[in-house]
Length: 259
Image (cartoon, rainbow, N blue to C red; front, side, top):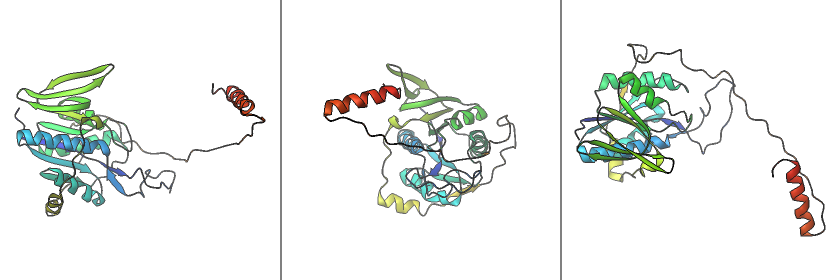
């Protein structure tokens, strides 16, 4: 298979292990937390490197975010990317808005034979950006892939299904979303990490409304947010023996509809 240019859509998200604090009802969730790579996008990056090893293609990584995303982008360079592009634009949690920006960036930088991204973002879990970008660029696409293999005729792609898996043969141009089962992202060597620090990160400014990319309304907005209310109660069960206590527990669970 011939593949000259490959793009990876890469997102950084608030650290899910961090301590979440609500600042304002309309604020972006997790805004105060440190940023980490979206886990499935790391799987997409690993799949891209495997394709590069087989085809000698050039990998460009595109990320929407603030300058704080640079360390994560440099990690993709250490893994094997040839170029990292940072698009400093706020799209919030809106999948359509993100897809418009990314599609415009790809169109301005391409064409690309293969586009890879994670199956879904770790913060939203929507799984919409990949298909939206494919639609905007007129590419065929396949979601939730669990295995990608380069062959002469194209990419042999596996996807899980009930009771087994499906196998597809995909020919470029194609966009694939990658699941966690597809691979285990590699750990770059210290030398490659140091070399990545010397590679400049390209910055882009995108007018997402320029050109007929994707129809639709204005981007989604968070109207309000609130922490879930929690209530709890403690009950002591009577019984002198273990059997009496077990009977009382079963009766209590049945009364609550738990059994």
